[in-house]
Image 1 (cartoon, rainbow, N blue to C red):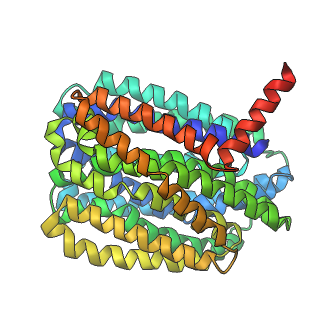
Image 2 (spheres, rainbow, N blue to C red; image 1 turned 60 degrees about the vertical axis):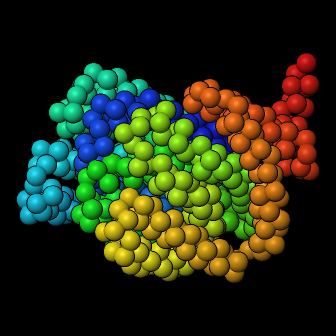
Image 3 (tube, helix red, strand yellow; image 1 turned 90 degrees about the horizontal axis):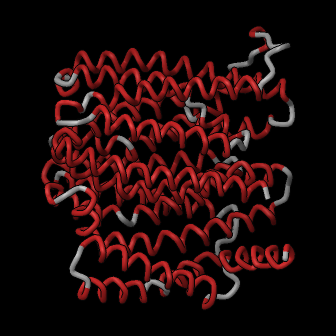
Length: 483
């Protein structure tokens, strides 16, 4: 029951992460134009890259350690303080490096005001504490907190960004909202932790260094191909290319975020099951997650590839036509990154195979760097899209290879090809309504409604014993009992 609630709140949070940008991003794109959208995404990617480095593996390690300490409040307080101090020290050190880059690099110095606010945004991320609240299974708090912050952000976008000269206000708003977020977190921390018998003398920072170092190397290598793509595009091409590429990738990452929320919500439960020795229950939970993610991501990939022109023209306008092909190229990332989430950051991390994750990430890093320098200077946003696609595919294959050593994957291929065959009617739906519905928005809505109808028929009627049918039957039984 607790896991289902966590999934519900995390998916609710991820849906708001999709819906809110769908409100603000088209407005920003049309108001600021490709060049200013490009420089904003360049600055945001630069700041988030430093956030990843300063995290020192804490997004994974912190969740795991907090989940282990939840039953002992004093141990929990000690563990949190140790990890937070390490995170804060890393942030302080890297903020000096960030400042040095603003002064030394011409691309950053040309937008000194923007990158200075981006530096403030980076420093304040240490107070986000997502790792702590996830480890504590505080997904309801995370969802409500984020909903309030995002509503404030939407209001601020329409109030303070009115023309192309207002693009710096984007990061000013981010800094302001980060301060509000820190206040929310401070109040919640005071309720969950117990500092009454706390002593700095008892802190053991060193014991975290070795396991975090391995995870840091993993996070660093992942950050090279996950965040550095936009930064390299900014250096090797131009801000306009960044605008087209980042706009396409951002649209796909909205859906990736929703699907990843399922994995994130299940991760503490998986860690708990594995350390309790309940391997059978662990395997069952992983299979359920795999089924849900594959069955949802495949239709999304197909829909985005076939309807990319409509999506770009409706959301961003014809000025972003060059984002159509990158959107189609990067659409399979929805499926690929979902699979990486299961095989890498669910199974391998839960069983403590951090070295396997590192090797997979190193493969991705080298492929990303080589392809970026080969493809981006000539193909620009298209080259960046091909680079991230092939990189993530290689990482996913490596994750699957290492996972096969831990659990059997014999039933997984059956589910994969079963869902693949189920895509055929979606193709018919798309091409039929593309022929007969002339209006862009109406066409997308009709395709979406009929695709959803086919999904329900496939999962609840045609396919036997699906996760969706099981959950539907449980809801029906509960409803009948209440009557």
